[in-house]
Amino acid sequence: MNRVCLTALCAALILTLSLAPATQSAAAEPLAVVSLSAQNGAVGEIGDLSALADAPDMPAWLAAMFKLYAEGQGAYGLDNSRPWGVVFQVDSTVSGYCFVPITDAEGLAQTLGDFIESIDHVDGNIYSVVGKQPNQQIYVTVVGQWLFASDSRWSLTGLPADPTKLLCGLNKQFDVAFRANVSAIPESVRPEVNEKLNGLLGMLVSQVGSERTMAALSSVMDSIDSITMGWRAHK
Image 1 (cartoon, rainbow, N blue to C red):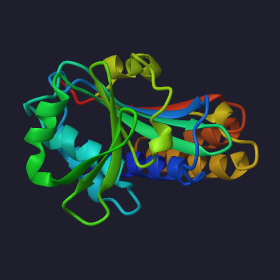
Image 2: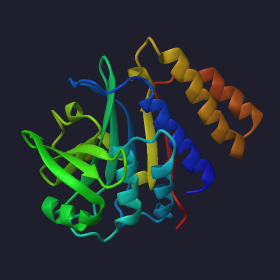
Image 3: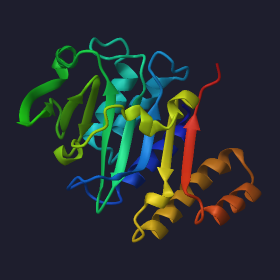
Image 4: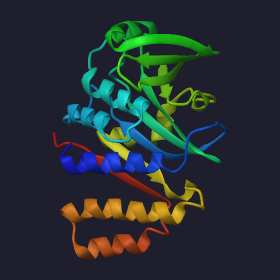
């Protein structure tokens, strides 16, 4: 991924996370998803994604996922034949979690042992994982052959048995993709979010498009239901 793509993806993630703090869970509809293709199928320079881990305001759980995806190829306990993803959901608040395909949860914990300070049971099947660097606490749980992680334990309830269905096939089309369901954005903040999304997509279009394209984009922002940004390296 080039610098423009990384900047756009980072901006989209931070915008989504800024809508509201994650404080509770409920049966929530997806607000946005990030799709990462299976590690053994990605043809792009996925190592570039590790740069997102150091982006300002990137939460620990999301930074850890990007780092592991970019640098953990071949790590024992990971399944590199299935996609990874991030799901943002909204009810009265916005929360998020990521999902990682695994073959052996305990084996993966041992593989990452040099980076983990402690793993403590919280409740049910939820654990608190504290890294050796400052501000690196996340919550994790396992459902089937998937590891879910978030900065809020309340986001790790009611998780899907097959989270790949939430990606709607994006992982088969792109190496990396971001889709926002504009219609799911709370009415109270929709004008502000639409304005920011307009600016974000305008930045992208300005790299490859024309003023006419940007004008057309601006005119339809208020009426579209979803926005998809995807990148795939040329084979």
